[in-house]
Image (cartoon, rainbow, N blue to C red):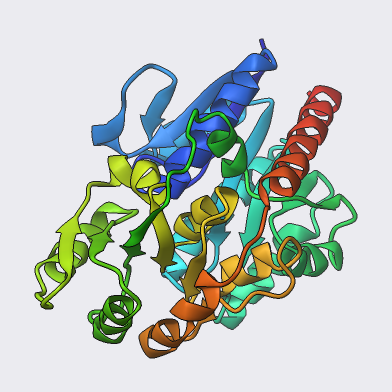
Length: 328
């Protein structure tokens, strides 16, 4: 069996990343590959996983691999930190130096703010043994300027959503808020109440958002029943709401896939991802006040994206499998 190393922000409890790694791993196993995954030490569950912070172990697995897969997300950005950017860059650069094919599968690029990050990213994208399935048109256009092995693709987690046996049962009085950074949602809550909503669920998509979500859920507004829900209940809660207000990419994606009106708050990555499927849509907000103003607008919107999202996703996985079998 050929060995693949699957790289990403895995094992940290971020729901979007866990959706991606789950479905990518299952696909690779179905294609007959052996898959190894670096995760935090405390999250190691089996012999196919190893400590991502053990550099010697990481390089050992690179040398044993027939190809390296970066499975979804936006790991090559320095908005979070240059340290994170350089961690992933070093993995891919060393892999290519060892003449290992590297495949970016459903990734976005940027934002990169430091000149060094920009130089390193351009250097990486120019490598001949690098293959890119870009998640959105902006990333695809940028990558294709440096690399001829660039394909416009989509998000790998769509395949995960397609396997779920869920029929949305939208409750007209329920809204789900997926917070990340904004500390107050008062304008949103007041407008939701004005529009007849009664139940507000604060739903974190990552462990680092849980404290904020609980604090927001404890805020009291007469006439609103506010509650906190665990990440493992996320998809069920989303599919039972009539509007989703999300600061997280995969919160908005889940709503869009199940045709639930959504507002994506200050998330340029999601806006540029979804625009080819939904060219005219009022649900992109700059801040909380802007999000409050747009609730009524999105409630009057109707769309049906599941078919086009799934078609693009299945096409991406098919091309991915063909490329892997040709390369290794």
